[in-house]
Image (cartoon, rainbow, N blue to C red; front, side, top):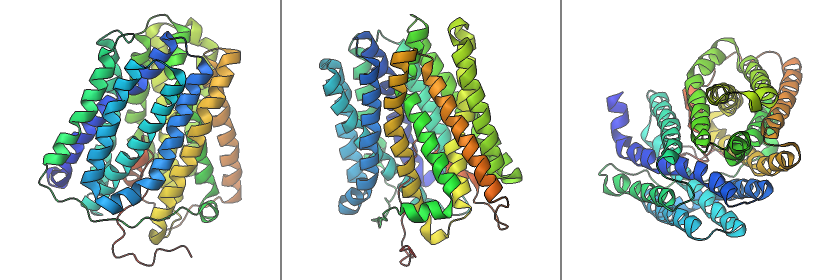
Amino acid sequence: MKHALAPVASLLIGVSILLTGQGLQGTLLPVRATLEGFSTVSIGLMGAAYFFAFTVGCLKGGELVKRVGHVRVFLAMTATASAVPLVHGLVLDAWIWTLLRMLTGFCFAVLYVVIESWLNDRSTSENRGTIFSTYVMITMTVLAAGQMMMLLYDPADLQLFAIASVLVSLAALPVALSTAPSPGLPQTVKPNFRRLMKISPGGSIACLASGFTNGAFWALAPVFTAGLSDDLSLAPWFMTATVIGGAVSQWPLGFLSDRIGRRKVLIASAVAAAGVGAAIVVWGPQLSFASICLLGAAWGAMSFPLYTLAVAHTNDYVDPREYVMVSAGLLLMYGVGAIIGPFVASTAMTFAGATALFLYAAVIHGLLVLYALYRLLRRKSAPSDKHMPFGDALTSAVTASQVYEDEMGHQGAENR
């Protein structure tokens, strides 16, 4: 394992610092927006704006890397992304914040493109699972740590914005000073949605549904906690518990999907996520601090792996030469859902209260179960050949942003 991680150690260190700042910012902004009296719809719009620009960044990131290389793009995007939290803290306007969230979404999408293509370039078929699983565990752990940093200062002050800015800036140092070789310039591949739906309609729709629910969660979960309690510490604890739940369940569900089939595990996970969401709606306002965090952990454990299961399921049917096209297409399915989800959920919360966030999520998960059952009846037998290793799909567990990989030697990868 040490040998496998050595070529990407500096990058993983940079990622851990970068995403600590991202985790802090992701929780801080909705909390501060609530304190400033921004409407729930405007907060949802900020989340939608983030994912809209995130999708654009995923489409354009490859072109930037091809033009100037991985290291320069990484440094440029961290420099830009580090300035944004400070502007958030200085300019308290909902429309300005929406534009800033768009800029952040674009920067982090490009950063994820650089990070994940770099990891893929430095890995082999023998160690890719080790490298990417380590990356995902680091990602989820530091996102949780960043959210807990909310407890350091009052979110109504500027200090937390400054800390987020400093962390994103420092992430550039390990990459800039690394002596490890950077990847070669990639070839970009545009997604083909018709081909994607032909390969796996079930996996594609599951990615879309995951975007609907996860995009709404990341944008509005702090608003949900504010609606339950005046205790501002509930937001970071609840977010952290949810992320930890998602991290812990990744490998068990993946292992199980290798043994009994992706569809069955995906359906069971979606059923459980819908059930937990319904429980939060019914009992959430009466639950104690610890109980609501435990339910959050259970929801994350069942909801967050759905995208990963969908990616692995889709790749069971993919010609290896189409891997890049499929990755880009699944990302965009997720991105479309994540753009629409925060707006729909925030509208529901405006009319039905804070718990409507999880009512919305339960409905989406329920519809996914129905569609997955329909697909299971339509195409009962899984491929007779081996599954794609579940570890390879973990790269999309949180970021959902592996848009391309270096395709040197795969010149015949055009869609058939």
